[in-house]
Length: 300
Ligand SMILES: CC/C=C\C/C=C\C/C=C\C/C=C\C/C=C\C/C=C/C=C/C(=O)SCCNC(=O)CCNC(=O)[C@H](O)C(C)(C)COP(=O)(O)OP(=O)(O)OC[C@H]1O[C@@H](n2cnc3c(N)ncnc32)[C@H](O)[C@@H]1OP(=O)(O)O
Ligand SMILES: NC(=O)C1=CN([C@@H]2O[C@H](COP(=O)(O)OP(=O)(O)OC[C@H]3O[C@@H](n4cnc5c(N)ncnc54)[C@H](OP(=O)(O)O)[C@@H]3O)[C@@H](O)[C@H]2O)C=CC1
Image (cartoon, rainbow, N blue to C red):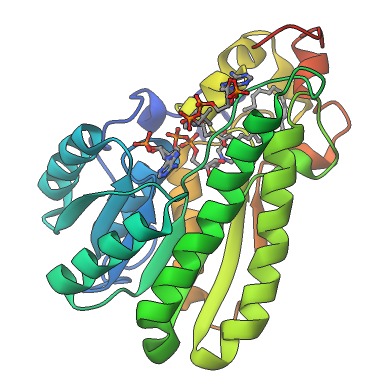
């Protein structure tokens, strides 16, 4: 008899928070990214780490790059152990173009090329617009939007312009209907969706595809925790999502793999929504659903 459909529960592979999968069954050909090189910002945790793992399990070498070098070193060790591929951890802050330039130079020295750029680094927290400081709004825009532009521009100028390549921007569906306590991140991700289309048009003739992946809530991640995911899940709020559960990191990584690989060779300027249909339903306002008051002083 068929297994009953899972509703709301985490899938087994997401019981771990950030560690690599203990077992994995290929959906795509294991050679899909054979001998390619992917540069993944924020690749030391959450969705970025799972993308690195799944790419490496498909024959890719990776660079995982963010601010916390100790975390990256640990992650790189685990990634190489489970996949047998090379993973280079590099320190950068996507707000600082010089640090991106140095990391891209190091990558080209080490691997000789970059085939794929995953712009995954981001910052987010719940905060009412009226309590959000100017600097807080600016900070999130600088990480999510400027960071995506800065990294794309450096990689394009240093390599993709002459060799072609593939960019996948990790967006979010949270701004698609408007949402409480999320004006900073929703605005930043909406700008990234526009950037995806503009760069796809400008850089297509150089052989560069630029696409975005827009997740809804993804369990086992820092973003999920910060946005009240566990509380929402316990309160049964994910029943309002058409697929009635949060997504998981592996599901996001498979979508990123599709966009980054030749499986999507004629796709550019697209935004792949991977949210179980959550943005389509009306009851998706995090603040309302979790009963979070928009007090002026609250820093959530
Ligand atoms: C997930 C949904 C869950 C439940 C919902 C339930 C049901 C809903 C059903 C359906 C939902 C449908 C869709 C949901 C879809 C998507 C969800 C999308 C999620 C997206 C998530 C992410 O982006 S996740 C990434 C999360 N990870 C991180 O943020 C890690 C990195 N973060 C950081 O480094 C920091 O947090 C930072 C972003 C603040 C940057 O750090 P730093 O540069 O050091 O900056 P600071 O100097 O610390 O701060 C700068 C200014 O910002 C102010 N600040 C900082 N923290 C806060 C806060 N918590 N609140 C308010 N303000 C803050 C700080 O004070 C500084 O401002 P000043 O004016 O004081 O200088
Ligand atoms: N989790 C979710 O439910 C959803 C997530 N998303 C998107 O998915 C992506 C990953 O989120 P998630 O896995 O939850 O969160 P994580 O916090 O695990 O990932 C964010 C990563 O970004 C890095 N980062 C943050 N700021 C900078 C910076 N200035 N320079 C370089 N790296 C930086 C962090 O590393 P370090 O601290 O070492 O710098 C961290 O590894 C984000 O783009 C997020 O917006 C979208 C929708 C839903």
